[in-house]
Amino acid sequence: MAAEGGGKEMNEIKTQFTTREGVYKLLTHSEYSRPNRVPFNSQGSNPVKVSFVNVNDQSGNGDRICFNVGRELYFYIYKGVRKAADLSKPIDKRIYKGTQPTCHDFNPLTATAESVSLLVGFSAGQVQLIDPIKKETSKLFNEERLIDKSRVTCVRWVPGSESLFLVAHSSGSMYLYNVENTCGTTAPHYQLLKQGENYAVHTCKSKSARNPLLRWTVGEGALNEFAFSPDGKFLACASQDGFLRVFGFDAAELHGTMKSYFGGLLCVCWSPDGRYIVAGGEDDLVTVWSFLDCRVIARGHGHKSWVSVVAFDHCTTSVEDGDLPAEFSGSDEDFHEQNHFSAGRDRANSSHSRLSKRNSTDSRPVSVTYRFGSVGQDTQLCLWDLTEDILFPHLPLSRTRTHTNVMSATSPPATGQTPTLSTTTGSGGTNGKDNLSNSSTSGNPTNSLPGTLPRSNSLPHSSNPANSIIDSAFIATSVSKFATLSLHDSRKERHEKDHKRNHSMGHISSKSSDKLNQLSLSKTAKADAAKTLGTTLCPRMEEVPLLEPLVCKKIAHERLTVLIFLEDCLVTACQEGFVCTWARPGKVGLLSSQNNPANSPSGTVV
Image (cartoon, rainbow, N blue to C red; front, top):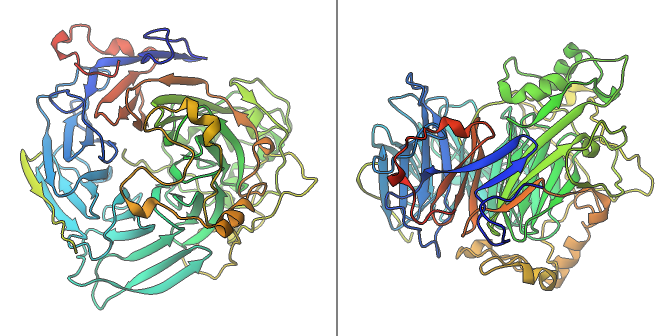
């Protein structure tokens, strides 16, 4: 476990922690917040979110940061571990009336030192396209709330596109927009395009091009977060009904599903090579799901309350020298053909490049480590290592680098296609008031675990590449049979002592005032949801390995809402409005020792 820094008592805020790489240290001079540095009264406010973009500035200081606090939105030059933050000089600051920013995303393809495209979602349902460098507001989408009146929960540019973006709402719907199209003056009319078990995709019926291009209806209750795969061809959706659903984005085909242990799923992320998805939520767990096998391969328990963010660390995820197991043997040419690889990859896919090497004469296990992190409402940061003893439990261990309790695990027959794994990089004022209008106006059947199955996490090759889930045409598919209602677990009493105020976990309804997040479950619904327990959708706790965190530290006074891994640091943020930079081992010296001590925060989290 990490060495404790900043104090010895359990409830004291930590300012450093140690992993096998070395010591991570909090840089108090690199803290970003509102200019007055006063803790924000977060009662009833939307979560603080952070987005990054690099504008390729020739000066070498091209990183830009955007974050929202209450009704305010800030845009700064991000100096990271290099220099102290100067909060007196935001590039852009906006204060909104009648609604609050809830999420945002930069388009990395169009970002320059003179212009950036930033999407901002709002609590009343609108989406704004702004340029905080030019201090311009380009367009406002869903202005009259004719498309959706509920809160925007997630907004993302479609990878590789300069004009398409996807927006999720607490209504459970997602909408595909084109920045070039208008939204129309009347409510859109839809025509069914694709339908499956608990999801449907509709096109917008219109004589002229208008937004939205598509409407996705996914699950029951809010769609809390979605994430594109590194190659941009798949979409993972975390919903309040407790289901992770993974779709082929272009074909709108359901690739696979997973059910939380209980409660809603709040967050989701992909590994840099696209092989694994991690989700977190109201069961206080992080769940690792194999894209290739379409099943849960591990759970992690370390948080004492809801998990709000999960993220992979592409800098620490690695494949060490060693030959690959037989499952990976096969020529580069064959492997690439089966996976429909794109020609280009960036450095986040270096681990996958090495996994695709051929070695048919030696089947020693590869030494692989996936590092991911999580933060939660319990104010704790957890770091996790996913190693070969979990990924390939049937092989001899090369070495174990994480505290892992490997329980007896069974696995279903391998299903699913090998994904395309070309990584696409994604993100991350006018000193006045912007006034937004706020008018009143598959393929994977769920089989119970058989009695005798090989305990294997091998990665199969597709026997027929033509059957890839990625298809330009919308084709008919068999419907997956799975339950869609959350499982209410009566574990509140057992965990109640571990929870502080505002850190409840024993019930399903969100603390948000948004009533769409509150699901009412009948006795019949509970019985249907309970049927998923013990199946491939939701294995029992003893049926999959249980990970323990490599690091588990309290780092804030209020619930944590942000975790982002950068090259030389990791960034966290809490609901008080403080965005903190943690220098990676060996990087703390980059911050000049001559920084003005007057910049030291008052009301900091340390």
